[in-house]
Image (cartoon, rainbow, N blue to C red; front, side, top):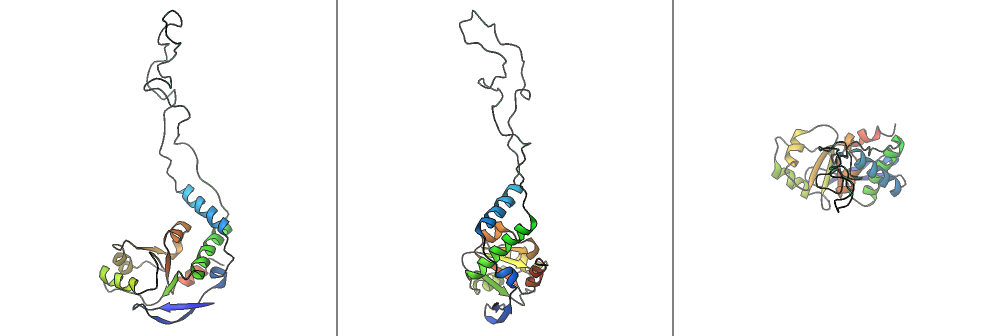
Length: 207
């Protein structure tokens, strides 16, 4: 399986071989959805917290006597129907939202998205990309020369400050190390751009 490879001028300069174990699997949409839910749930910060009866300040003394006042029976001042009372069935910050998912399933979900990117012509492989110094104008010119749609997720094989800093001010581009490719970003960004050397890094996931 082959696909075009592009140079820094945005022109096709040849063909590159793709690993069929990564870019030619059966796309499993159910597995992709599960992997996305898994990622979002495990990244969730549980902040919301309401106080129970025992966490509220106030006396537990019965407010007034049971009979003879002409009013409804009332107990503690912390009652949930009174101002500054405790909250019934409110959210608690000790709730556990984390989910578990098999490593092989997560990997297969990733390969399914990568296969989908290739089949929908949303995968671009580039080679020899470098900027002598961070230059947003040059980066913008480079990206606009590529055959992309809407926005770009650029997977780097290794940390590259020239590319990362040049792309940081472009709202339609996000750079990420290929080791950290994830379902959320792959679904959010329409076009995936990979360095040629990053294909070898991806190939290690198959082993």
